[in-house]
Image (cartoon, rainbow, N blue to C red; front, side, top):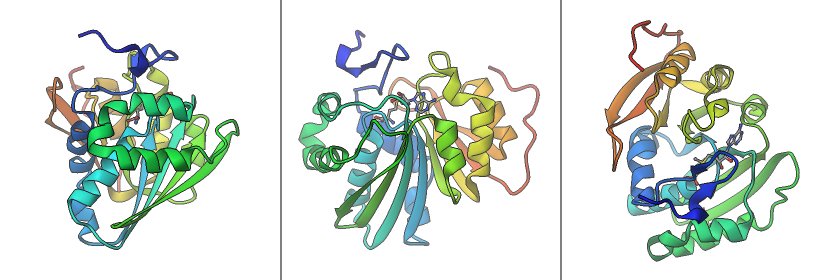
Length: 240
Ligand SMILES: C[S@@+](CC[C@H](N)C(=O)[O-])C[C@H]1O[C@@H](n2cnc3c(N)ncnc32)[C@H](O)[C@@H]1O
């Protein structure tokens, strides 16, 4: 299938996400993969980390997901990063296909995004109030490893949503995934759409017990990792 031009990130010759069911895809891979509802049934605050903010599709999907599950009185801190920040207008056009199900949420995110300075390296803050509570978005403009290193406390959950490892190996590099392991709570979770062998091995080195889950759409399998107290050595015989 021909990928529409507006979905492509020219820095990596890759799309921001798969436009078919991208909101449902985020729910399956990232929210079910990290058992968000289960976590929120035990506590009212959650710190999430994400590698690559892109067009903010996961944020939109997350708000929609929490609203549909009738959650109340929670507070989410969403730490994310973007090396090549998009303009508000570009994000609007990338998210246009979701206007029908989530137009009001897209407008809220874009109103907040419009007020930050994406030309400055480092943290920028946005806050969105919803009936379930609030979501505070800390967006680091710059390199992912710098963002992870500058986090003052570990996250409960990580969404790893960089471009494909072949298109952008940098965002899956061992050093970065090790740093993410250090900035993840024990028993915290990570999720990603790629099951590439190098990613699985680095996540295992970073202390995650990695398992494959059924995929979504065109993907046969996706990945989930559970952070253990002690490092788990990756088996040497993992297939690619
Ligand atoms: C697949 S897109 C993310 C899509 C996004 N989660 C969404 O759903 O809209 C990956 C993003 O990571 C960014 N990125 C790539 N390498 C990076 C790096 N080293 N540090 C920070 N961001 C990076 C890209 O510019 C791109 O916007």
